[in-house]
Image (cartoon, rainbow, N blue to C red; front, side, top):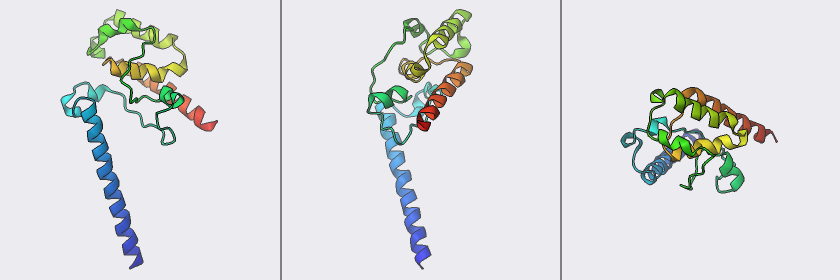
Length: 148
């Protein structure tokens, strides 16, 4: 009998958590301009889980997060990339690709997460190879910070 009560309580907790997560996701979608289905760029946006220990409201956490509550766009000496807004990476010219690579390969590792966040806000999608490399840098920095 006690096991049944514990099981029911656990299922209720799981259901409540799922409902709250769905409500939070809908609020986030509403705040960002609508559901992901209405936004063709949504599938190209980077989604990285944020560490539970970081609320994202502190400058240290915000700098390392790919998600932000502030809509302020920070430029990383890459204003020329604005011409790539809403352009699919497969449509980039050699010049476009070289410009993205130059910015990426000349920035410091600590700036990569902020740069990716800036690109998201500016609706600029980078080629998958660079995105994978950038996410690897962000993950390595988080892992190194977690060990400290």
